[in-house]
Image 1 (spheres, rainbow, N blue to C red):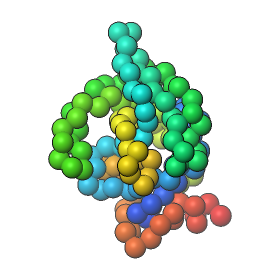
Image 2: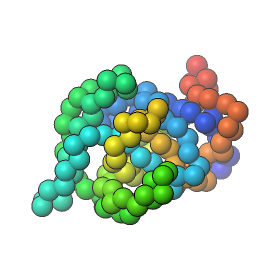
Image 3: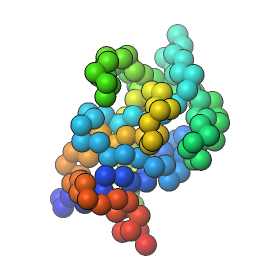
Image 4: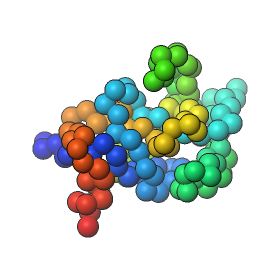
Amino acid sequence: MEKKIVGRREKISLLDLDLYDLDAKVDTGADSNALHCDDINLDEEGYVSFVLLDEVHESYHGKRIRMPLYKVKKVKSSNGEVQLRPSIKVRAAFYGKKYITVISLTNRKDMKYPMLIGRRFLNKRFLVDVSEEYLSQKQEI
């Protein structure tokens, strides 16, 4: 299978969360995908709830979402701090195709991009050209 080339920033839609054309940083240093959200709560029934509300990111709609918890894992953040992060499985639209992917939920309010696309999602599908941006958008036109 031929790998598609993506830039250092791309648009992704998370269909199960009603988030469309979300700006994402392609991060080969990150193992998994991460999504900015607030007020993250786990319940005894195996669900996680969170709020998608942020004035900076216009795609965010302020809804509280409740989804089945995929798993909780230890993640080392960019500052070296180890955190326990819940993750969910969602349908994502990217580069003209739909994928099922795992996304960890975290507060990224101080970060420029509300989402990171990590190595697991990119692996065996995409190559990253760091000199480019939004190549998936240019291909769809």
